[in-house]
Length: 276
View 1 (cartoon, rainbow, N blue to C red):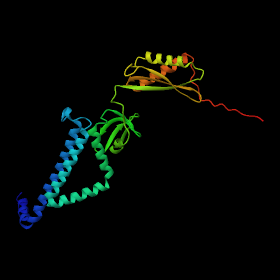
View 2: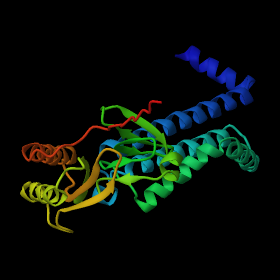
View 3: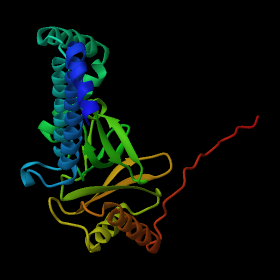
């Protein structure tokens, strides 16, 4: 112990500047390590705990966690550099120049951040809702700072840049309690159209899931095709469990047409030849 004390006294006497810088560097490294640990702990706590309760929605929570994480990390690096002696004015100038250069180099990434902010402010989609764009479809798992995570119908996770979610047409299937199903059917030219309409309307009316609001079931003659007369049967169904409900309506329609011997014709082509 006395030997260590002697070494310490000798070091402080012979190398005061080196010792002082070493202690300062150790303090700065400690600040850096502690700051990063605290940032990671807070981000994890915000994601998995119920801090804020209902005031912080599940959609907003991942973005808030990321913002807090990056803010603490940036402040920690600033404290680290000022602790080892870098002037704060020079740091601000360097950060300003670096920010401008990074902003020009990563304009698409910054655009994704801006799009993410708009998605969070205007709420066109929320966690747990099924949405569809021109390229993607799935249930929203997370709206992050840079991308939105969807879980598609195959159970695969798809990471979509926020800019693509914001700039494309989007359908949100979770915002409605009912949806209209439109079934287009082609019948033969020898079909009694009035009878066909009556059969289709009765099928829709007798289906348990079909609703009479906002409008009752409908059936219209739409057009005369090359091989069939095209009818359109329409009705409203509850929006939940949509695939099963709409499938059941189609099965009932097909069974009713078969029972009434109404033909759904295949495309046909008549070829006429002339002989000399």
